[in-house]
Length: 211
Image 1: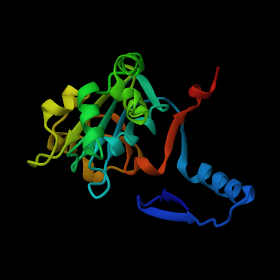
Image 2 (image 1 turned 90 degrees about the vertical axis):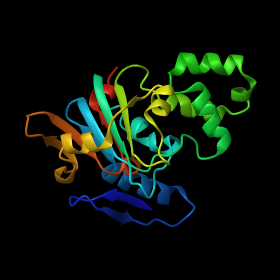
Image 3 (image 1 turned 90 degrees about the horizontal axis):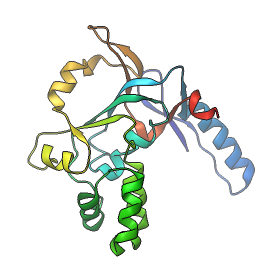
């Protein structure tokens, strides 16, 4: 199934492919490239991502906002993640514990932690997730969780290496109800790039493919 976001900002099914041979896969992949891959014209200085509260309740899933956009974000850029239902780091207690203990502090630190800790050696999936969830210091990541008793706190967010933002202030600052997919110009002239469904796409700037 190839699902994307249409011009009205709504999810839409663009194709359904059934079969077990390469031709079916190839057709689906080509359509997905057209629907889900966004090559932006310039590196993005500020990206604003919405995490649907019915779908994203952990950074384990919510970090798609990071690794689906990282190839498009400019060095020194900013990623702001609006996550009203964020209440945990991992989808299970053990993964949650490991994320809380080791955090998202980049590849060198994570690899060192793997070398020195058997619990990460026995859970390389968690270690890989810690790496995927870091910008490697190239751009800032600000998580804005909801304010309920069940939500992650500022202290918890900052303890794993992210910045924390007030979700109400951020939604007001960026005129959230008026945002459209892609580039938006705010009343003060600031340009932001808005993504409503990070799980349905991959964003990149062509410089990432030039060597």
